[in-house]
Image 1 (tube, helix red, strand yellow):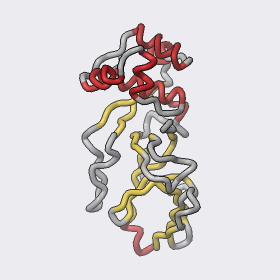
Image 2: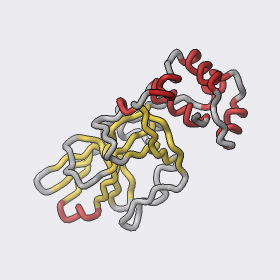
Image 3: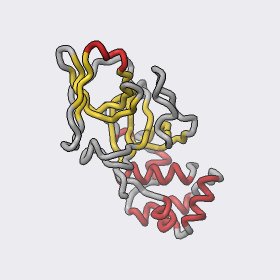
Length: 206
């Protein structure tokens, strides 16, 4: 059986929008504090609670959880990254496994490594909004695909932007027109650390 936080994430993935603790509490007819306490205690969900959630959100969860191979569990890093400086990327040790439908993930493969991080800021709005969850396919040495959204570090700063290749530079673009286009010249490419490509977004309701 799954834990309460995993149920909340599964509902979010099925609805393609974030379900918070208050909404889950309402669906199960319990208080938000009870939900918070049960998540801290890693309390498991009962079958009757699964059915309550299905009815409240008008989705089918039970068959998905018990028999659908379309579900994969991905590491979710609540703090995004502990560090992205000094030439290395270090994920926070604080993580949990979230159930995600593989149909949500562009080009999904069991042989690829995925993680989930939180989006902050508005530079990629309206494609990615503050608070969205981003599913990252970790970089494995492939060439940059023009105009795809990547997670990367440059000059010890963390970014989620579109990347494109030019003859002797990398172009960094935001979807929000208020942000200017930036470039990384050939001589500075050694300072670019690719983490991965964004292959899906779970939208926030906030």
